[in-house]
Amino acid sequence: MADPAIFLTGTGTGVGKTVVGCALAAAWAARGLAPRVLKPAESGCERRGGVLHPTDAWALREAAGDARPLDEVCPYRYVLPLAPAHAAEQEGGPPDLDRLLGMIAALRGRPGPLLVEGAGGLLVPLSPDVQMIDLARRAGLRLVIAAPLGLGTLNHTQLTVRAARAESIPVAGIVLSDLTGEDTPAARRNPGAVRELCGAPLLGVLPYLPGIGEEIRRGAGPGTPAAARLAGAAGRLDLGMLGNT
Ligand SMILES: Nc1ncnc2c1ncn2[C@@H]1O[C@H](COP(=O)(O)OP(=O)(O)O)[C@@H](O)[C@H]1O
Ligand SMILES: [Mg+2]
Image (cartoon, rainbow, N blue to C red):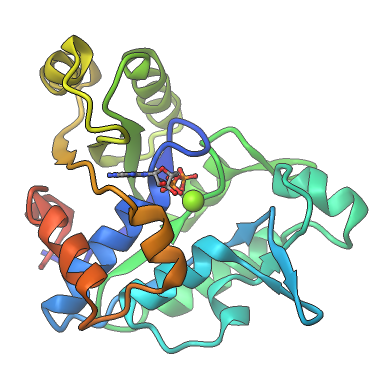
């Protein structure tokens, strides 16, 4: 099987994509696989000394131990917390699909896993006539769908899988992330329900990791306790479904 090359999407914003992405990247890095990451567009960036700091892209790059400059890891950055297409209306040009496809193709040409994190969910506008799903489809990457473990996930997860299917995008798997650690009826029933309803593999449940958001924002580079925590959590997932790891 080839190296993993995945487009990490989610059922929305704040559903656990970046934490799942950091966990995958940390697990691959711990195995010496030299993962590369791309966050094509990030909005809601902080301005730091005249430079826009993309929190997700930075966290992913650290977890992967990917030394490429941030401009290559996150080529389109915006301050406004809006869909990239809409932030771009007030902050310069929108992401250029062909440029992004070229970047992804170049990254795929190198050995090692590739992880591309979308912004929001699949139907988020990237530019006036392009949605995130178009980028995933044109890039030819398989999807990993991150979704919360708890109540409300069954509808959103199925909608996301159906949207992918409608565009013939293969779904490598779904990861349910435990955002709260609460032992609820939904948290117990949903993994089985996702298997029954979605017709796509469930890679597993990423366990609740208290404080992980802050840890990845501080940097979970290879060798750090945070990286070990993330890689340990990723050990609960069936990573073999993603490729040669
Ligand atoms: N497995 C987890 N355990 C604990 N908290 C989590 C977990 N996954 C996500 N979170 C929390 O949810 C927040 C949003 O997750 P994030 O991965 O940034 O979502 P997205 O990338 O989809 O916007 C994180 O900053 C973190 O605080
Ligand atoms: Mg994110």
